[in-house]
Structure formats: structure tokens, C-alpha cells
Image 1 (tube, rainbow, N blue to C red):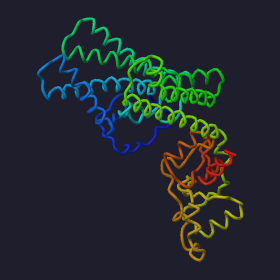
Image 2 (cartoon, helix red, strand yellow; image 1 turned 30 degrees about the vertical axis):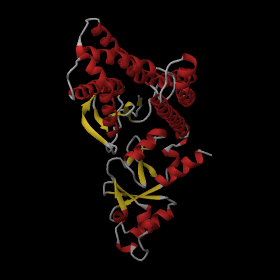
Image 3 (tube, rainbow, N blue to C red; image 1 turned 60 degrees about the horizontal axis):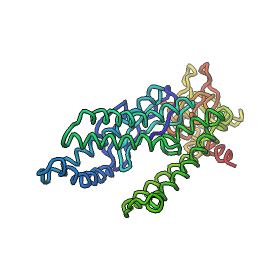
Length: 386
């Protein structure tokens, strides 16, 4: 499973590694992380597979657990291929991918932001299950060659697990890949990504309820034997599906408010002053011009800083005639100058990448349009929710 992305021209800053994970390499341009929970499931697989190892290759003793652990590594190698396919297609469309994480329930690919088109959403999502089905198909083909011993066990396990993963991931409910396929279909039909996510989210909740009652269906309708482990697994899977679907729906409602955020409409009128101008004089000029912000410029008019409102208010008035305006201005480092027309999700992403109180808005011709305050963006976002 995965989550989509921002435009290619704005690569995000490297994200800190999630706690409890270990980096084991890089694949498809993304860090490969293993969570601590993976070691638990690997140990469980080793114990569960050990009796089968004993059947196909008797006399291994304690080495049967090592063979079981090796099978767990091979199995998760196919999960890694599934996730790497998501990452490769996302990068093909120009979307940055920060990491691939292997965990207790399988894997997850962290693709920044959201897909821009239904077609991209579809291909980024569907390639994972298709990869699993392909791995399962290759394993079935190898099985026809009649391998023996541990190789036979590994081939059978890979075929069964990957075919099951491929089919289940195509179930049309978020957060499964099939849910994102459904989302892309509804999105394409309605021209609304919000509608696509809500529909796929509700289907995901239905799937979660079905997963919860699956052991009961097995027992009462199919007459299959069911144990406590089946109920525990059903509860874990149902919780995973329900929380994932709910989170996707909440995110969709949040994103539906983003298009109302337009930097140009939120900008404060600004006054450009020399960076060595006394602060008191800069404030006087700003008040006279009814400007809500101050930008410091060099002698040739190049903007170099944005006056921080909090730092200005913290400077006593009796000191302001004796300090340069630049002393309360934040230097315009990368990320603090934004296009005046930036809006919606790209505006939020830009603010998230480079947190600051104020940003300078620049017109396409390089001229200064105004200053954007984070406080104003927050207020507008809250107002958009009402």
C-alpha cells in the first residue's frame, strides 16, 4: 500500500526516520526501513514454518528455525518488491518517495502529498497488487519444474502468499490498493478527488466489518474449524482497515478546504526599506503607508529579509531608533520566498517544509507582491472549515 505525491519541482526536505525503524538499504530511490515489529512477525513465521521444514528436510534440529527465518526474509522480499513497484511508478510520474517500511502487517510506501490526476492514482496503486500476482505466477511456474525439499516449500509459500496478497489488495476499499483504484475511478467519473476518497473510505469500512466477522462466517456457514488465533487476526486486520479508511476520509475533508487558501488573497501589504534603516523610522514609514509588513532590501533593491512581527513587538520603543531594521528581520533563506500565486496544497507543503512566521511573496517578474503571515493562513484555514 502507498500514499501519493507533490509536484516534481518541489522536492521535500528529508524526513526524520520514524522511531523504532532501522534503515537496511535503498531501493527505487527510497530508504528501505524495517520496523521493530517485523522481527516479531519473522520469529512467528520461523516457529510456524519449522514443523513443515522438519517434514521436507528431517534431521535439521534447531536449524529448522533458521530455515524458517530465511523463509520469512524471502517472503518479505516479495513484499518489498510490491512496495518498490509503488515507489518506481510514483518516481516515474515525478513524485518524491521518502521511504519503504516493512512492518508487522506487510509494508508501506511513503509518497509525499497527493496524486494530481486519476490516471496517476490508478497506476501508482494497481502496480503493487500486479507485482504480487506476477511474483506468485513466477513461483507457480517454478513449481511446475518439480523442485524438492526446502526449495519446494519456499516456492509453494511464495506462490500462495503473493497470490493471496495480490487478490486481497485489489479489494476496493481504502486503505488497500484496490481502494485507491476505486478512488481513481470515482474521481475520474465525478471530477472530484474528495468524492473518490469518501466513497472508497466507506467501502473500506464495510470491508473492515466483513473482516471482523470472517471467522464467524467460516465457522457457522462454511463449517471450517476456527481458533482463537483466527479471531485475533481478524480483529487486528479489521482495526487496521477501519482506522486507515477513517484517516483517509478525514484527510479528504481536510484537503477539500485547501483550495480556498490562496497566498495572494491572504498577503499583507508590505513596505520595502533599507536593511540598515533605524527600526523606529521603518515602523513610522510602514504606519504611514498602512503596510502590514516590512521587508528589508539592499541598496540595489534586492530583498534580503522579512521583519519578524514577534521580534519587532519584543523590541522596546526607546531602543528602536538605535537598532537597524535588519536586527529583527529573518534572512530570506531558501523556502522563505514563495510565488505570489501559490495556493492550496502546495502552499501548505511549502510552509511545512520551511516553517516560519512570515514569507515573502514574489511576482513572476521578480517584484515583491507582499508578505504572507502563517497566522493569517491558520486563521483562513479555520474559517474555511465553518
